[in-house]
Amino acid sequence: MRRVLFTALTVLTAMAAMAQNDSAAKRNPLTANKMPRSNDHFMVQLGYNMWEGAPDSINTKGLPRTVNVYFLFDFPFKSNPKLSAAIGAGIATDHMYFDKMYVGIKDNTENLQFRDLSDTTHFKKYKLSTTYLEAPVELRFSSNPDDNRRSFKAAVGVKVGTLLSAMVKGKNLEDRNENSVLEYTSKEKSKRFFESPRISGTARVGIGAFTLFGSYSFTTLFKEGTAPAIRPISVGLTLSGL
Image (tube, rainbow, N blue to C red; front, side, top):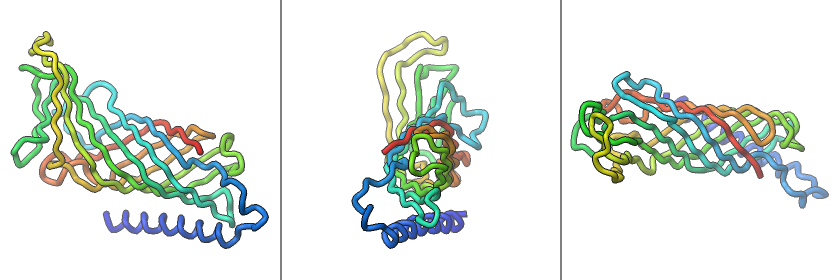
């Protein structure tokens, strides 16, 4: 699987390099000083986060979310200006909320513990947050590349990331009857149980500055043998510009 993903990433990156060379080779000296076209160099993504493969014993609630920010360089193909390749970097964060659960990311155990605390003291609000440094690569189509504000757009790609941090945060203790016990905030950070690399497939489609996006993680969130084989899935809205 990883060999296939590496090959796909290599191909997409090579396409970006080819597009850059193609643009440089065929640039018209009369237009060399023109500003580059606007084509989604800056992207902000807000989405809904899901865990494929999570067992029923893991109780989630609320609105699990994804927040991503990327800056990309876009290289149009001179042979077909409607097509381009883009490569860049950015930060991706996922936030999963739990209902009366404990996630032992700092525990000295062989396996990651997900414990149901509904019959004892628990946090009223409890979430797991992860932050990744990612490098997205996209093959893009624009129906009107000279006016992207009104253009239909579609893109497919791959993003490769590395885990920067993983944290569980709990706020305000309650007893089993949901009565307040103590108002305070707890934070614990550890990457011990998490897979550091993340490779995801991506797709976008929309018009102008707004596109719908989806991403699927080919790699598991947690290390093999330490937790369920969970793969994050995100869907949401991309706001792009520049």
